[in-house]
Image (cartoon, rainbow, N blue to C red; front, side, top):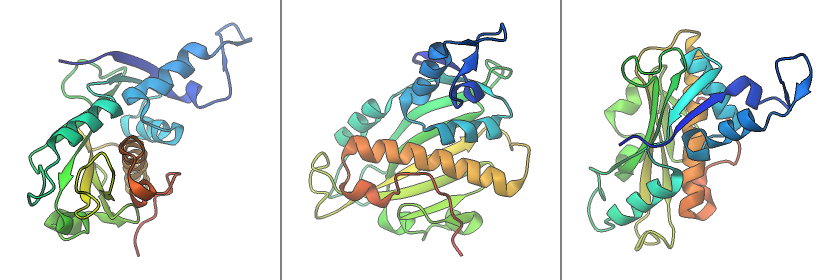
Amino acid sequence: MLGALTVVAVLCACAAGCGNGSGEEGPADENTSAAAEICGGALSSEAQQALTRLTGSSELRSTDEDDVRSVTETLVAEWKPLSAPPGDDVEADLCAVSSNESWGNGPADVRIKFGFSDAETAKGGHEISKALTPYEMGEHASVGTQYGFLWFSCTSEQLAGSKENPAYIQTEIRNALEPDGDAGQLRDANATVLHSAAVALAGQLACDDLGGLEDKPTPKQRG
C-alpha cells in the first residue's frame, strides 16, 4: 500500500523564502515543510535539486512507502550475519518520486531502495560495476544516467554480529526512463541522491563512522 503523498516545489523550498504569488514575500512554511518531508525527510536540499534535474520538473510528488526508520526496522529484522550474503533477497523501498506532470501516468519517475549485499559486490567486483561509471563514495559506487548503486559497510549495535562481520548495504536509484540532459550531469544527479539516501540510513542505523560516507554529497568520479 502506498503511503502518504507529498507534493513539493523543490526550487521554492531550496530558496531562503518564496513569494506568495502577489509579488510580496510570504510565508514559505507550506512548501518548505513539504520539501523536508519528501521521501520521509531523507533527502537533502542538494538531492532534491538533483531530482529536479532527473525528472525535468521543479514540482515533485513523493509516495513515502517507507521512511528511513521503517527501512531500518526492516533491515535490522532481516539481518543474518552468518549467511553469505546476509539477507540478499531483502529489499526495502524508501520512496518513489514523480514530477507533477507525470504523476499517475505509469511507473514513478524515480525509485530509491535499499538492500543487503555481499562484500565482493560492495567493493566493485560485480559485473554491474564494470558497466557503469565508478564514484568515490562509501565502499564503492557505480552510477549511470538511468540507474546507479552505492554500497557502504555498517558496523552497528543494531546489527548483531556486525562488529565481526560488517553489513554491506546497497543503495539503489532507478529512473523509469532515460532522463534528458548531459550524461555527466545526470550521473552526478543520481550519485547525489544515492549519497543523501545512504547517509540518512547510515545515520539511522548508527553505523560506525557513518559507514565511511562523507556528511555532504560530493560526487567524484573515480580516476
